[in-house]
Image (cartoon, rainbow, N blue to C red; front, top):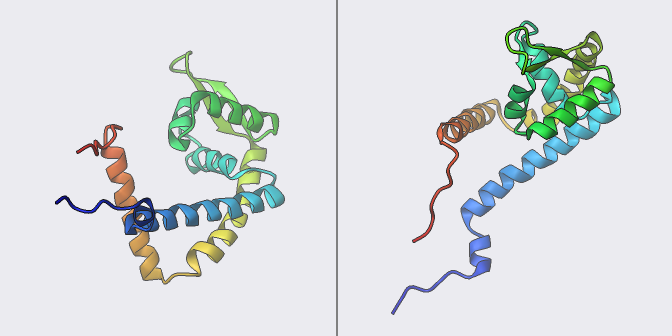
Length: 166
């Protein structure tokens, strides 16, 4: 006699499904809170904020649209539309690469930098309230270390999918 097969309900209640669901739910709700506050108080979306982080972190670094797409996990068309909106808002400007005329670089404008500085305060307030305050510093340190290991493992993988067939 064979082993009893799990039902769909049993599979849905599995611990890995539950744990990963909690991670996604927390991240999604936090993202929504940050995005809503940023739009209301700074006039930019959270993804625009992420672009400005990358551009303002090291103003001397030359950042291409392709690098932004990879960092933000966007398609080239998606990042082009995003940069179009940010350029129209006066937050960034496109400049030709001095090294490769096929490459377009993106840099923050003075207005983009000012917007970013204001948005950092909005971001910090929301992160403090919903990410920092609910857990101990030791738990947050463990979570951060775990997320770094997960990210490292994902980036080390060549992008293939795990074969789960029997």
